[in-house]
Image (cartoon, rainbow, N blue to C red; front, side, top):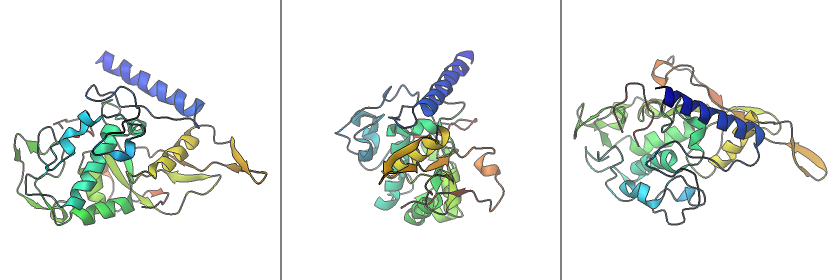
Length: 274
């Protein structure tokens, strides 16, 4: 136990130094997961997760189980236990799995008790809406995909996603345990100010959000390269702090963020399940 705490302390200390001392040169890092790469680097031959080709924490070998249907990323469990998923629904599930396995930015939301997992990674409400719409008519028998699979059987009957999850927020907050949390998107990040909590869409545009987060947690007083002789302040946003578990949040509670375009059984909530 002491070793785990010491290891986690080193991770936190390392990230603090990187975020404060090098807010403009972040190349990412990898979660402490022996199943994948120790540090990010180019992977030009990824069959899936291609948005991470230039800088990835996974190799093609690490994502073989999601490169072709049916995907089996739930520790040998097939995603289509209740029947084949629609391509659009499966695409969203793959994007979530790719972020956890391959993104060099996932480490910014490292789970405090499980350095190989993520917690409270903020997803834009608009993204969750598209995800829910893509999957609402597909079938599932698991609500929390990190804990509800027992052997090769589900803990409940097969129902549609829209029966399992009451809305898009419910899906993002619970499908992969505490790995993700839905937050509201409002306006674009304003220049020279804190645009509120950051949110992601698991797409290439997340790079802009990560840059804004690093500015918010680093020295945001440093001016950007001047344009037409005038200094421009870098846009910033801040980390959403998981003060309470997603399932314990008050009904209808909203958190403002910036708008952009758009396994295993673990009682502590690993946020993994990929």
